[in-house]
Structures are given as structure tokens and as C-alpha cells.
Length: 145
Image (cartoon, rainbow, N blue to C red; front, side, top):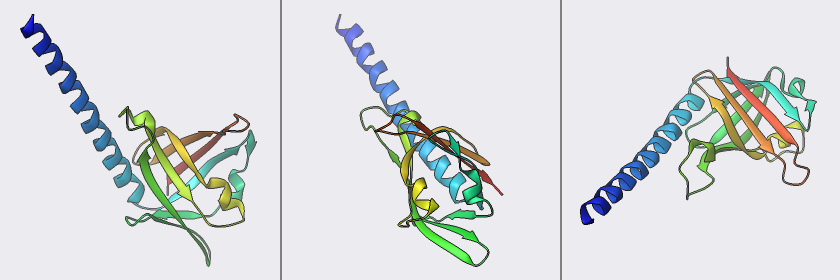
């Protein structure tokens, strides 16, 4: 009986540690992808309204220090970004948030949120947010230039 409990505990510890390692690898990979190159918004749906054109021509660069620059022509807006784990009790990639914040009162303030990942790759990041009040879903997609 003791040996069964021992092996059961060993299995639980093994799977728990793999989950944390996988989560750390996912975060590291996403960070690496985001900080590489410049990005553009190819989809922004706000409460079922397509507002992608509000960000046409802007190039986004995500810096290692948590600063994001959105540049179009001679205009540059500065914001902050990070990737956090929204649920420390569960190390699933589904709990990773892509946080954006621009201290502005224009279209960029609509991007301020803790976005959930739909998918991510070296060239495309698809995000969503379900509004707390209305329950509407917003979508944000970045693609590498």
C-alpha cells in the first residue's frame, strides 16, 4: 500500500513540475516572439464593431523593458506591455495574459486590457477579451511586418 502511495505522489509531482516548466517555456517563447521585429494590428473587433482601420499604418515594437512603441509617420505613442499568469493555481497557457496599457485618450486607450491568448506564433498573435460588464468579446490580432 505504501508503495502505491509513493508512486502516486511521484506521478503527481512529475506532472506538476512539467506544467510549470511548460508554462515558463511558453512565456519565454512568447516574449521572444513579441520582442522580435515590428508588428501591425490586422484585426481589432471592439464589441462586434471592426475598428481595425483606427490602427492602420502603425508599427508596434515591443521592448525588453516593457515599453511598447506605436509609430506612424512622425507620430509615436508610448505604452507598456507584459505577459503575466492570471491564475497561479493553474499553470496552463490559457491563463497567460498579454497586458497592454497606453496612457492616452484616443483610440489607443481601447487596447488597454489584459488580453487572453487564442494563439501565438513567431509571426502572429491572436488575442481576446471578454468584457466584465457587458460580456461582449473583443478580438485583437498582431502580425509581424
